[in-house]
Length: 221
Length: 221
DNA sequence: AAGTCGCCAATTGTCTACAATCTACAAACG
DNA sequence: CGTTTGTAGATTGTAGACAATTGGCGACTT
Image 1 (tube, each protein chain N blue to C red):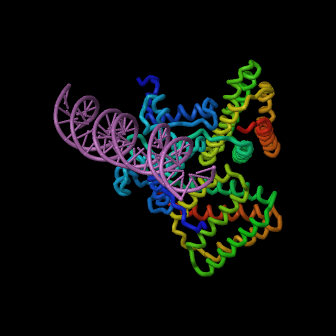
Image 2: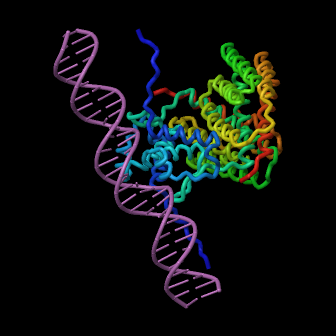
Image 3: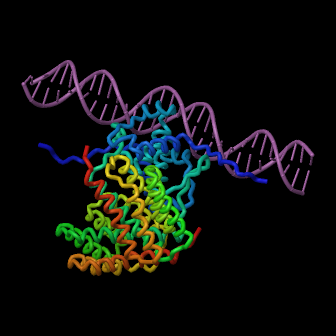
């Protein structure tokens, strides 16, 4: 009777503009400090200024752009301190998620994590940097989701966006893909064995080293 | 030469509308579930819909209202789970702030906290519930600020807003003002003596009991 | 020459009108 | 009589025009 049809979604121009702009910022295409002139954006996207303005207001409250009255909106600049704070907050949120997940573990969720890690290792061996990054994000996203804590999740989204942006802005030279991928294994192991102290230590170290490496090379504009 | 003059600030209609609406929501004047029709709001505030829409988009990304396309915006409903999550997040953020503050304590900051607590006790003895609430907020705000962690602070603002809203929505019957005020003293003591474990335990308990008391009496709509 | 004033270009802020979409209810159809 | 289809009213979504504000540059003043 009913066959599978793709869901038609009529996204408002505001949402489309928002997604486009956010994606451009997170991918590093729009670099920090870039001016976002409403008229220009409207012309480029072929729409009017109204939905653009609403999208910019949202990006502003997400902390991705900065607006000065009658003067313009720019992509928010990132300082070394910002990056350190972002990673310390990430560590705090993920550690808390881990604590909650391990307090009442679900086997189905564990399987999801295991699948992701295995895929990540495969992608790492194949040298597919895009896939490794996507799966790495997926791993940590899943961990947060598993906590079943919606407020935590919404806070995480904010931090995760900035992490994405930072990762896109640094040129990671010494990126050993296989190493990154395989670093998730012992963590997963500790989680499945219920060794919370060890899992927490591994997770914290994992995040801290990532953050430190990036903060080290950061050059202020 | 230069005398003290009050700063003249020309706030945009968007900002004024935003402040007005946010205040109304946080004070419980606009109850969860209330429909916020753009045309009505515009008429009531004597402005056009454009700035109202932008304000609503901001409130939406702050999680205070909920929008459904072509259907309207309503004040976001709060479930018992929401409240539990808000308070657990509050506990997490404040505990982290405490940890950072006690790692490198500043005597000037300690004095600020002490002043606030003493004022709070005075206000409690005088039965001034408004002042006690304001000073209680001030105490916890100050603690967060003292951490010098801007990302933490921005996350805290989100949570603190919801805490204010929840506090305004419950009718606290058994509110012993003097007790609330004096409960801050041992915490402050532990902080000043550098006893982190004790300070953390007191803070966590302080927040948890507050949250539990509210969540207990919460009646879903 | 230093300072002040006034104008100009660029940009954002606001308003009004119109288009698109949704829900519910009524009408047409088998 | 139940199902489907059309329509009305309300609400949000978008567009385009106009107003307000800012910062900078140049001319004028003393």
